[in-house]
Each structure stands twice: as C-alpha cells, then as structure tokens.
Length: 627
Image (cartoon, rainbow, N blue to C red; front, side):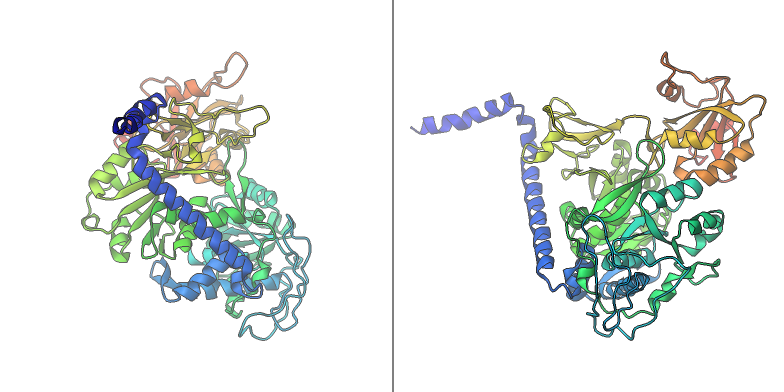
C-alpha cells in the first residue's frame, strides 16, 4: 500500500520533465516568495484605495491617491525625512504643507479663493468623467482670509481637470507643484527639459496644456519660444524670484502667500480610477515625443513598486534620474511615498560624487539606468566606495558585462533588474538576481504569457484577440527567464532614452544644404545602447557647413538625440524597394580605416563636429573621448 502511495511522487519528476517545467523547479521557492509579496502588495493597495473612498470627502484623505497617501504619511510619520536635496531636508509634514500651498495657488488660478463661501468660477467639464466642482467650501483650518483671484496675464481661469505643464529640473519645487496640481484636481504634464522650439510646442499642444511652469534658468533659451507660448493663451509662471519677462509671474511667491492647511479631498478624487492623472512624454518609435496618458490606477500601482522590490520604510533611496521620466517620478518618488521611506534627490548624476553621497546620507537603495552603473565601474577607485550601506540596486538597462563588474567591485549587494514601459500595462521583475535577465515567466503567475520555454515571444493568439506591441524583443530561456534582446523597428536607445530616427532625420533635413539623410544607431565599445549616426548627402551646389549643422541640432534636438557621428556620402544606399539601408550602414560603423567616406564626430566639450581621424577614433575606443 505504501509503495502505491509513493509511486505518484516517484513519477512526478518524469512528468515535470515531460512538461518542460523541470528546469524551473530550481526557482520555485523564489517564485512563490515573489508571488506572495505581490499578493500582499495588491491587498495593501486595495485596502488604501477603499479607505480613501470611505474617507470624509471634505478631508485630505478623501482625494486622489497622491493626495491621500501624502496626507497619511504626514499624519503617521510627520517628522520622518521624506526628501533630501543638497543641504535641504524636508519631512513628510513639510512636504504636505508645501504641496498644500501650491494646491491653493493653483486653485486660485481656477477662480477659487479658498475663503468662506468661495466658489469655483472655472468649474466645467473636466473630461473623462472627472467631476466638475461647484461651490467649493473651505475645509481646512487656518485657511486665511479670502484674497482676490489672480488676474495674471489675462489667460482664462483654469478649468477643473485642466493640464498644467512643468518644465523643471529635478528639485523639491517639482514635487510640491506636482503634488499641488494633484490636490487641486488638475493634471500635470512632465515636459522633458531639453525640448525647445517645435518639439516643445508640439508637446504642449498634444497634451492640451493650459498653463506652463518653467524654471528661471530656462528663460534665456526659451526666449524665442515666448511669443508662440503667449499666442497659445497659456498661463505662464516661473518657479523662482528672478527677473521675468512681461506676462510671466513667480508661482512660488504666489504659493508662499497661501495657507498650508489641507484642501478638500473631493477636489482631486477621480470619478473613475482609469481617469487621466498626468502625462509623461515618451519619444515613441517614430516622430515627435508622444504624450503617454497615466491613469490614477497606474499611479496607485506605482506606490507598490518598492514594496515589490523588497525595500522598506527605513531605507534611504538615491535617485538621480529625471523626474519627467516614469522611472524618476512614478517609480522613484511615488514608490518611495508608497513605503514611507526617504529619497535623496539629485538634479544631476555625478559618478565622482556618488559614493560620498551614499556615505553622507546612509543610502541603502540605488535606482539606476544601466548607463549609470557603467559610469561608476569606469571611475577610478574611491575610498568612499568601501564600507557603504547600499544593499539593493533597482532599475533597468544593465548589461551583463557591467552587471558583473558592478557586483564584483561594489558588492555584496542585490541587483534587481526590471522591465516596463511608460505607456505599457505590464512590468517584470528579476527578483532572483539572475545576471542579464529582466524578469521571469513563471508558470505560477500570468507573466508566463510573455513567452514559452521554447523561446517564443508571442502567446497563442486567437482571432479577435487584442495585444500590446512593446516594440521590444524579449526572449525566454528554458528556465523561464526573460532577457531583453533588442528594440524592433528603427528606434534605438542611447543614454537611457529612446531615439526615433525619423525625428532626427526630419530635423536634419530642414537644413538647406542637405538633400538626403539616413539616421541609424551604431554600437560603440564601452557604451550602453547605440549612438546616433547620420549619413548625409549634400544638395548641389552646397557644401557641408559643420558650424551651422551643430547649432541647428543643438537647438532642435534634445542632447541624447543629437547624432554622435556623421558620414558624408555621394548617395544613400537603398533597398530594391527604395527603402534606406539602415542595418547595413549600422554594421559598417564609423571606423575611418575601413570607410572611405568623410567621417565626423561630435565633440561635446568643444561644441562642434570634428573630422573623425584615426587618432580620435583610437581615443574614443580607449575612453579618452566623450560622446
């Protein structure tokens, strides 16, 4: 009888082998642990959302997820440090007060004065079912006497649900204004700080922006754009007290004059959790930047990011990524808010200063993109890199070679590589630490639909099925690990950014001395991703004007999209169907010893394109020339 009972157990390995699940059993414990963590995270977020829905709509915890989570942390951990930026430190209570001031200033731009009986003259259709607010009452203690509604530059009052664009660097003011917009029932649009001229105006129009808050240090470079911005009828604010052109007022001064008490929660509570909360711009696969719609649900889900990564409320998170990207804002800031931890925010990453910062602030978690880790391993040895407290590094884009060097030099620490998209609806986590993988397709959860152990990318689609095309190629190995292979289409990745070849080509083709342009990405030893290269054909009888070309790309393309290499040709290579040969050109590369065409390289330090000589080529490969 006992032998009969043991027989199924003896046959189980053979059955699993036949089902091709045997190689995955090694990771069963890790798969189970992550599944339990994910279920607990989902349950916690659901409980928070239900509590907010049941809260007093007049109180701050009855608002949108950003509003009630910040209010909750200000109540539970008021003195705990939320943000460190340079010499500045802000507690959760101070973050709540600062964002409340910003919210009241934005509400005043809506025509609401916050005083007794104050009405909302800007009430109207908010779009996507978001509620229009009428007869807003003052629900905050110490809200102060009513003040006149700001007239500003003559722009009409902001309607509930209107979009306000932020053109700001990574700084505390970015957060206070973002949180304030959320509390005021307005949508934020995070505009990449390098955009100017046509791309900037395109972004503002595509998200329907009705106002723009910009950093004072950007005013000089934005001066040619101001007439077009005024013509759009935008409210124009600067986040600082420097001298401003006519029609631009200091928003921070307006906010500082407001009371810091909470605003009613129902101002920001979405009618539907799928309503738009904010816009984040992604370069997409073609053309100009795209406005990715971020729902309230996605913002809520991002509160669970660091919980899924295994971080906790006593962690100190180092964040040196742009806040206009999802990685910096939603994963870094909202993820930190979700666990009630501390974030060290850097306006710009410095590989030479990194470990000193970690020692000074007791950093335990570092959020990266792959290029940052490569910068660190390429630095000379530093005393501060010894004895640090960093135990977890989280991010995406870390190549296996840099991964190994990073762990060997700075470990022991855990690397948790993730994969996701701003506009996507799924994410993966490499919670096992398997080098080079971006996640798992475990049979325990739905992620297995990313692929099969045979390596197939597509699930078994049926007629009428709808699927989301990421534009990326992932492969699944026989153990269920997902690995990033490459981007499909013409888009390539450089400096952590997606570069659309069509956008770069269109910018270059605007020059009157260029007749044809072919843009593609080339692999550069020692660098992540692919650097932009442009093959150029001159328009007769013009000659190549490198000075004008550099000025043009500097004004019309963000830094990451500017071609690092130029190749001057008599004619462009095309296929039999007259399509440009990008793959062949990329394989030919930029070695001056093998190419007879004139080649040029972008000298960022000198601000010019220079002939790519064998000496400069050798210096580039040796790491002595920055691109």
